[in-house]
Image: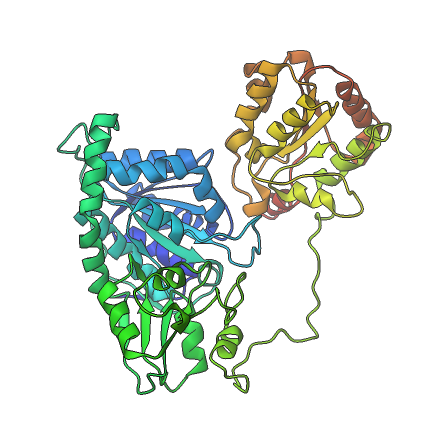
Length: 529
């Protein structure tokens, strides 16, 4: 076995490769992006011909991976937590169809919303879908989780979630590799109707899924990711899930005096939980994200007042955990291992890069809108969302991928005319096209500005799915060709750009303006290369 020092995401990626991966499908989104990027850069993956593709969105990525599983191969799907919302339809239904080749969903949650528009906990999705989930506590477990998840997936013919979080995804530690496994051979399912969810078949599939739940619990009881650690002080028992186990151990470098149940695989190991609850007077639940385990324990047949965590104020209801918060929950205010941000570290708000094309687009848009009332620009998810900040103060919404176009349509339906949608080229390919089709069908007075910086910039410069096709897509969706305009966001083009935007704002129908200039950062990297 060889050792290396990867990010948590890279450990999971190498684990998947060593476990016989045949294909990875993903849409880039922090904190998940490095999983796919690592595989794309891997000489080993290239020599084996491992399929690695950025999909148009998370739903299409998951469906492609399901197709690879149908053909008997092991497939990995990667996305951030809000991407799972987009992929929820195939995610839930894949629990019914089951899998053929091993299928693993790597979902990276972002507690504290470092680069996300909400904070949610993907373990709830796994519980909702009734599938197993693994939550690594460290980089070695992230590597091992890939092997275990694929084995579990093929053992039960069920997809398995591996839940990562920001700190684990983006920190490094030593990892020892195992002997690689060969890829699965091409093989079709024994039952060629396995993936047909007609109601009559789905009814039986649901019964099969329910029947497997006891097996999943039994696997959790025996899982190497779940461990009971005895302690002499039974006044308190601690359940530590995923990376929160590390935060606990940082407070007890010489060993925790309390019984600890480390949780890294779900569904909950009921016998291990019962052992801790019966042995201890009080129970503290440490979990990164929402109080999934705490809520479940409060439903156990004992005094719920004995359970403490995020729901009763022992820990904050929102945001990441850290050793300091764990110390306070343990009543260890005098701990020398408190991790406070030094006062010398000043917060700096994000801003558009110097020379960013979006800045020139916003300057032109603001000038073109001067004769209209405020509050009519609907934006989307991307670097350009920073247009909400001074000096631009240019946008009025940012809800989810693709919502700019459909919110602008709804506002126009309500009488806010003109309404403007601002959306990036990658986000347009992801989920803006269907909204544009709705607007075309309704002949809505909406101006859609596609900020085309020729890349998926916010997540590191991946190629956009619609790159080179935006004009054809707009026309193909029914936008009149004369109202598909291209501008170059540069200071010397400012007056011309204001003129184009002003003309289209006055059009009583759907218009698309493509503001095209390469991202300044990807251009720099290309020049260096």
